[in-house]
Length: 574
Image (cartoon, rainbow, N blue to C red):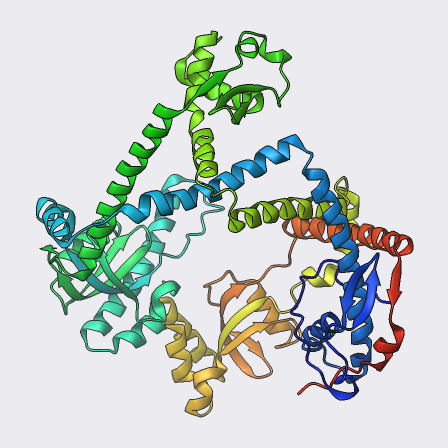
């Protein structure tokens, strides 16, 4: 049998009966594993689930074999999880963690039934709160605006030796962006379609697909230069260019909402109702807890509190509440550093320790109350306790099935990288736009226009040879590799930085001006190291799991009803 998924959730017992299997009862025994039953319904449900994930007809007959194998492994795993759960019941530290978790679930019931259920807020209280807190319900002024962002190109100052030259390079980059922004502003003011301008020019890709729409925003939300202009521009006006750290912005203001008082509508009433309920809940809960504290009976383990802390074991009791619920030394020790820091004490007297313990009594008091009220005995709390134990047992089982000590060496990681190099190599690296010309001088002239601020895409749609529908798309080569456009073209494109425009490049097709839009890089070993490490660990874990499962199956008593299994025929899909 093939070994597939080790841990699969229990599936519905509702069987889909078909073909020659239609007379088999869902509860018929397919197999037993150390006395634990696997029914036909279990097998059929899992086969149906797996059947949706296969493509080839010839694999269909293997489904029942794979599914049965998986169900057997599931039963073997369940047996061991049940064993771990039984052991956890005798693990003192785990029992304390489970008690705390169960206590939280019981506390929620207590809060819902003894606190929350007794809270009421009337309409008059809501109105009174609104009138007394009107300043909390003011809608601040907002503006709705769109923008086109022209970024400053990064100046190439790598080989610049003087500060003066560096400043010149920076100014040239700023001037270039400013000229482009001025050109876009003039187009917008002349009546060009705003959305088309955004698509063609805006370098804010987050908002360009929606016309540069920034939505409504409050004063102070944007950078100061942008904010000041947006809030001082009347709706319907286009202004700019506005210089910020991001570049130059052309701003169109669509709407302005002055600050105003929110009316006491249904939404505000709901908000206030929630506020008043939370206030009442806090007051009522505090009074309830104060009552528990006042009526609680406390007993301290004086001998332990007077002894050297280093001599105590974690399960030694230090305080009890109402003669039943106990605080142990571990709880006390965990809280000790925080208490010392708060009180600024190096050592504690017995009275100091008792004072600290009174701060830890809340959970004990609440647990005692939930027991007295019968919440601990409710089925939902018992289920919560069982689920908590099963989750912990599942984690222990998962860790047991992993090679927890394995940490791939640098040599193993490098070997894996070299053996899978094709997975980390980008075949088509360069995202390229281009325009073809038959005349070199025309290519140079259009290149100069683009460098002066003309949009490359607009120039391509105007000058690319062929019919208009060809010019609309042919300029965009998407990502290319060395073999796609020839060695000369690729070499020229590969020398560019993203955003740069080439000089005219001659090929068999004509003269190209090329714009490099983006460049993908091969993934280095350092970049993929975490993924390789994870893959090596997963592989090692799979080997360990397979070995453990094989041993389980050798030692288990597995009884398969081969006659029924042979009779079962998975139905064809669709």
